[in-house]
Length: 470
Ligand SMILES: *Cc1c(COP(=O)(O)O)cnc(C)c1O
Image (cartoon, rainbow, N blue to C red; front, side):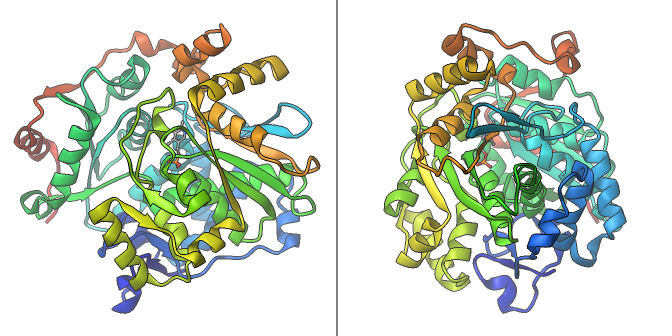
């Protein structure tokens, strides 16, 4: 399996990468994102035969075609076994019924209580496996407003050949989120509380990726959702849940709380591989650039308004570029020009081909804070379920989209309600408690370094703890 860049250059100079290369690189050298040169296919019989498989077995079937010759099927199975063995539910991603048509797919049974664990637990193991074959060492540098940082730290803590430096804005992440990062004690984990906002922290990370003094000494890498291997891991639960509800003989729809468009793009990949999906509902909050793009073709970034669903508070959706490439005829040159225009003006218009290509499968809904709270109350009244603010936005979208009542709609439950106890309590009057397995979070010792909002101080800190590559 070969990987090409959405901006064209990888295929042009004949240097397409394999799965290992795409995983370790993250971003393509031309600034584009990697996609496989063609979509692996499953026949209806092969999908029918997935019924009743364990999550690990199903993951092995779905992931192996993307890996090509980089790993054997047995190696993929062993990695999935290790990654998903750490989940607290034997079904890994259990499905729950809310009413005749509405279902919840619980993706939050991993170590840090958000769906990002599903992808990052596997990515951490893939990094370690691939690095162990090379004389190489990764220095992961990231900025987090909460969920990604904790999931990434948990996934790489204690792994050889990887150091992780995670910046969070001091005093601006929740206590649960901070403790999920700072109580992980491993020599390769470095938490940095930075003076300033998330955007300030993010700007320092971006500067480090361009700082030749740093990039020439260290193999600096990222773990954000542009990494193709993360998306591959997410394709699995679309198959797992659809097959449980009768695929391939019966279609299903999905509603996906969306920020960077990674999770819902994995649903698109599942459809491309042959899974009969009726519709993918892109659920956004009031930061609705994707809703505007899908409903009117206007992809223009405004300023971010903070909400109770912080992981969806974004104005630029990096993975949307993958969809535009695939539905727009896979013309990397044209897309590179379109994306450069967007980077300059923060606005662009989708082409007719892109709009028509997306409208076949995608629809979108924007959810305001009142609608979010109502969806939390409805879930609680209809079935006694407490759901988090992100999931509530997905559920609102699912319930307000007209879909044939014979077709089940699966809302992806992306975070455990106890990660956002205040918002849940405000809407329902009930305060969700942390699951027993993380219950000692508040008695564990924290460790982090406080640094001023100054790039040189951060660079100096990374330099003194990271491992240089030859
Ligand atoms: C990251 C995240 C999302 C958004 O997922 P994308 O892949 O960025 O679209 C939604 N909900 C929660 C809880 C998240 O952590």
